[in-house]
Amino acid sequence: MAEAKKLGGAGLRGQVAGVTSLCTVGQSGAGLTYRGYDISDLADHAQFEEVAYLLLRGKLPNRQELEDYKKKLVSMRELPYAVKSVLEHIPKDAHPMDVMRTGCSMLGNLETETDFSQQDDKIDRMLALFPAIITYWYRFAHEGVRIDTASDVDSIGGHFLELLHGKKPSELHERVMNVSLILYAEHEFNASTFTARVCASTLSDIHSCVTGAIGTLRGPLHGGANEAAMALIQKFQTPDEAEKGLLGMLERKEKIMGFGHAIYRESDPRNAIIKKWSEELAKEVGDTVLYPVSVRCEEVMWREKKLFCNADFFHASAYHFMGIPTELFTPIFVMSRVSGWTAHVKEQRENNRIIRPSADYDGPADSKWVPIDERP
Ligand SMILES: CC(=O)SCCNC(=O)CCNC(=O)[C@H](O)C(C)(C)COP(=O)(O)OP(=O)(O)OC[C@H]1O[C@@H](n2cnc3c(N)ncnc32)[C@H](O)[C@@H]1OP(=O)(O)O
Ligand SMILES: O=C([O-])CC(=O)C(=O)O
Image (cartoon, rainbow, N blue to C red; front, top):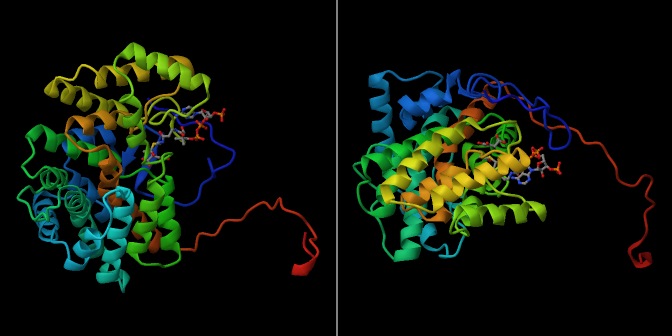
């Protein structure tokens, strides 16, 4: 059982900043629940769209509701011409998270939320469009093709893979994407979600809340860690090399991306789930390097520092085995977490007070005004 960590110190750690009925982290069972449902049950049995519905509408959908919801999302996959045009102007070497941020923001210019009664439709449109935003840009910038963003695959994860690779994904790959999107969907008051809630608390529009959250997720201490984890494991050819490399990094006090967590103390319950799928994918592609290297990294970090893999670490190899370019790893996180962010925006709006904490001042006191020409 993942235990709650003793929390305190800087970074608002351990301070309650609001109330939520969406998620618990590190409190009970496997340590992560969405509206009371354990993450391992959701990952084993649910579809991502079912989980998005649960977060956004407050209950699991029945069969008809889920079918209608998926149909609605599929019907919203067409990218507006103006978004395509903006995406075509973004350079090939841009950071894909910047592409997501711009795509989301541009959508907010074209399909502005002018009244909160529109929030559900705006949210569903983002869920439906985010795979198209990133893959349209990626394939145009890298291959010079303008892809058709409609596809027959009705799951968001499968749709993303089809747009990226230009062919229907295998059942296994669609399943792993589904699990991955479920694992990344929601995580209480993490930094990007808190950003979204702060923005929502000013009564701003939904696209601004999500655009800000994307910018926050981009950093390597948060969502960007899955890409950094990939860069790390790719440096090593064997588990022994990985062990030696990690020991050196630890000695130099370097941060090892994909390890540790702000709340969990002994494990991140999402890790065991994605690790299992990474192992299965490794068998499928006949990998004898990346997966064993990743396992050794996990062993060394626990043995040396009692640091455990967070959700990001085994996502790196899993995504790689499915042929996903490393720079698209964090945008996948966005495709999923938009469900959690926007569920929090809705919750914030339901019982809002502007979020405005205080600071302890430690600057100079009684500074005397000096005219500009007299300053040193
Ligand atoms: C989906 C997600 O966003 S999960 C998080 C993804 N981020 C990463 O993987 C980045 C690497 N990990 C980290 O930087 C951190 O563990 C964070 C940002 C996730 C959490 O930060 P904190 O809450 O400050 O960590 P915590 O209080 O547990 O740190 C305790 C000590 O362990 C060290 N530590 C924590 N994580 C790591 C790491 N991955 N590698 C090396 N040392 C680490 C800290 O530097 C700190 O040492 P210090 O006391 O000498 O300063
Ligand atoms: O909760 C956090 O601080 C980071 C995290 O794991 C997430 O957002 O999924």
